[in-house]
Length: 108
Length: 512
Image (tube, rainbow over all chains, first blue to last red; front, side):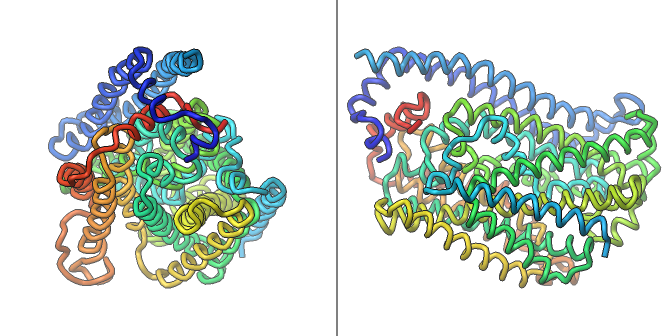
């Protein structure tokens, strides 16, 4: 409803945008980035409770009295910040591609 | 009565009321009321997300949990943070591009059925009210301990303040209260962490070495498994933590307060840095409390450990630091409950009243006025429930809110954005099954039934063995959405999905 008020895009316009090669490239680039990273961070995250629940391997010390469990826990923070920065960088490229899609629509 | 604490509480009340006064001048129409006109910057919204998210449960609860159970308490910190990757990678930008005022707007961008909006709004109100009762009961207990006021008086003070912020200042006031609270909380936690670290001779290895003898748990304090002994229970807890945030309505609405997807993205990045740094510091809060306050004193003040952080402040910084940290805890509660009232009121006024009842035709004035009445209604209901829940252990309500968010909201959000075949039947099934299974499993869990007298609400054998329902209810929510879609004969509306796909990926069609 909102779209109709602000923008006079019709249903067929959306279809033609979806079929345009620039939009398809944007979608596939996004998929190639987002899906593997999402699978990775879920695996990395759940590895911690699974390892602490079903093994004592993380109870060995890393330095002094700091065990691997704490190191792995801290790595979760590092991973989160790292993937955040990576996403910002990648998303800037997606922005350029999305702008292209919007411009092409304006020209046609 | 603790005079410095009392003065600092008053200062917080005064500052927030001044903010509300200025915010009220700008709150003229529905957009200003619900989303501050979408005019926040990435930094401002990042701080506000942090302020909205780091509740008393995070600040007081995690500090206490780490102090009493060591590594197991720290699971919360990790899950609450990693959850932001789900928000950033999967939800934030499409949500901003598809929605307007509420989470239901986003679902309605694809399915224009009233019942879908109705269910989404109902879930929003249920989650927000569960969450709010937990915060209010915590607030009542805290103020009682800190200022010596009666529980009822304390809950009423917080209840009246949150209502005032929302009805006069709407999202403008709520956002700024959250921003200031985030800054205070980070500052307070940083001061404590530095003092704690200094007391451990500025050495992290020293700190860990000393923790081996500092608590009654001895060496096992540093190892996982003190509190969570059942593997699947631990995993269930972690599922709820990491998947719940992306379905929490009061967090989701924050993305409508910025102008576009790009700003929504940068606000999550800022929020993730702030929240992450805070959760790292919970180690110092917890270890410090265990070492310098001591297990028995923490438990004596509050069996769940909720007073660990204020007691630590007193032990290492005297009465002034204690007063300051207590006031920070008070501001923390105010900021979170204000966000919850606003979210629940928006769901009622925007979704039920304007979109469903008035078919989107209510005037700006009627919308704002209904939103204000809804805020009053939501506050009254929450206050009454909180007064009735005084003697209950309500900590599980927060995990329930996360579980319902992950089970009932997240599947619909993900399917709406990413699954072409998804249809209205699937959406209804996902929301209803997610909601009912999460609440149902909690009702038969060890949180409600325990064989030990006084440990839970009822005495009896729990039918569901785990303390959080996530491991069952989250897959059920996703499965119900899938099966509902597959088994209904309804054909997917491909045209509508193409529209959603274009909008969510490019931002075409959103008002600037």
